[in-house]
Length: 439
Image (cartoon, rainbow, N blue to C red; front, side, top):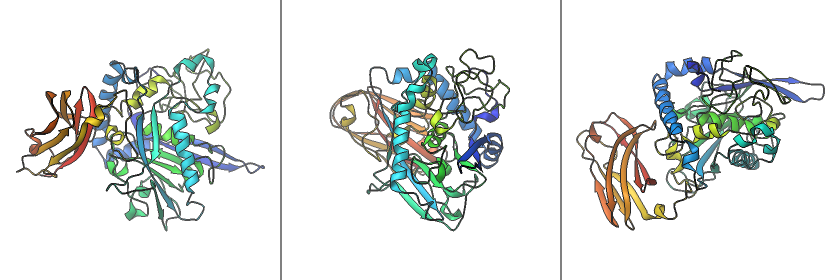
């Protein structure tokens, strides 16, 4: 959609469903979105969120103006790898879903985000040229925060019989399970959600302690407790789209035709779709092709959504490239070498990047240390806050192999918080590390 986005529609969207039994005992589900109400709560709990979203949107639009994902991946099959931690928070045996069910969801995500889903052939011919391979790979994390082996799955028995959208499931003290470091992992919580809630995601810019996605166990994966018509894993595909900063395709304005998802190659449409609509569905004077109801960011049944567009890919990629809100996740190394790029060896040129002392107090003179195994050109050291904004950068030019250190001024006078320092060579990221300022 091309029209201006209403202020409340940039928010975290909660997709809810209501269940009804048919004579054949087939569940029918209707999703609703409580984005405006949840937005008001986010502003109350975290006033910084709106400011962060504005900064992220500015970064996204600048990225798109420069060519977006088409420039980033030109001449290469760049894959951004996302390590996933699945928190299974269960009260009953059935809610303690199997590893096979969890893996089935990871498989679906990899198919959908890499245009490997077999049903992509169902996209109407008028839009086949717009279908995007988002070039994102998901894996269950193999390393925990201390570098020890992990399955990427945490199982937590709870006395709570259900959870709501108040984020209790994200805190051990409230019957759920604490998030793992959101700068290194995508946290997925699977639980029983009350009130017919299907799932909800946090847009970039919110608190790290609640960063991630929550999915009802009846809408997770393709087997086990997954229930028709949300039994092919597309709920997670949809919600993670929000985590990547995608809006609902109709712009969350009811049926007013004035909302926007800030993507130019998705048709402007009046509202969401349910079930399996027949093509075309015309609204907002968008004929003859009508609404793109088969897009993952609409509300069609799982079996009837099967595409992202190239414009949506650019918005998602903007969260993953250097300076993007989730860029640190792709280089955390928690499930293998990542991201894969066209570079044939510069990433092997780097040994370790550290900062001493860490945390940094007001009386400290912090220093970055790094080692190059061979010579490299265009060395750059940059510091970012946890919302992706560049705070400081220094271009060091060409450097031979050896040990180096850099003591940037004023780091000890930065506001308290968590920051990321990144090392670049030849305009490619070759290392990153996190540090804390605690004055």
